[in-house]
Length: 311
Image (cartoon, rainbow, N blue to C red):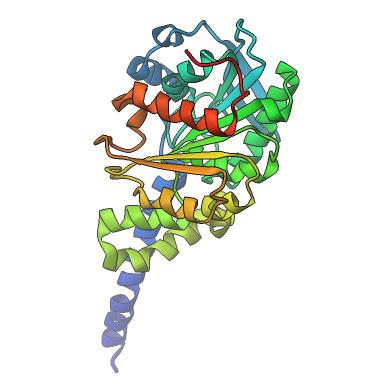
């Protein structure tokens, strides 16, 4: 083979490999480093605490290793002797808590809502889909206990999407928590990346790309992508868990919550796959009254003494 033909062969072999690595790098970058909107944009999009019937919160910071978590603390004057820690979704912020907060506020609960690492005013960092975030969440939860004087059995956890998955990964660490509300969770990191890849590049290409995307994301973010698995962690949960998902969710398929439920202790886990026509994580906005009714019914059954009786 001539030198020229040899170079042609090398180039023909190298080009697909380079294209593959470039595509995997791009999707891994979107996965762990997509820019989150500033809080000013979130405020303009969602509204203020006052718009949701809440008082002005206290701005707080919580130190989790080398990460500073920024957030809000709402001290409820009704003194229901209860608290709820809320965790927002991917490239969201503490402002997302406002959609859910009225449900907890009327029970007399204090509320802690903070920005995940890499989001809002918290320390910039790669997103690890619960791998490191669950440690941040545990630190925030213990801070909440100390600040409020409430026991673990008096502080529930609620989350949406990325935050719901983080809440489920946190569950084994807080066995005495009264409940977890997980709205629109993914079953595993590999599962949600595969679902997104199927939409973006088709199922044929996704089977080749997903392993590369996960490998690059794990190397850049310094975490084990295979360890991010809410459907595994739910099996170790000791508290009642409420799973909510929209059947028309076009980002995280509702089958993810079904898979989580299938691996749970079904004597204390409830799943609602709602047919309200909502997009991803949109049920709370589509029908707040019906959503609240689902939550209140769950609490009546599994945590009847949590907070004040709902109105």
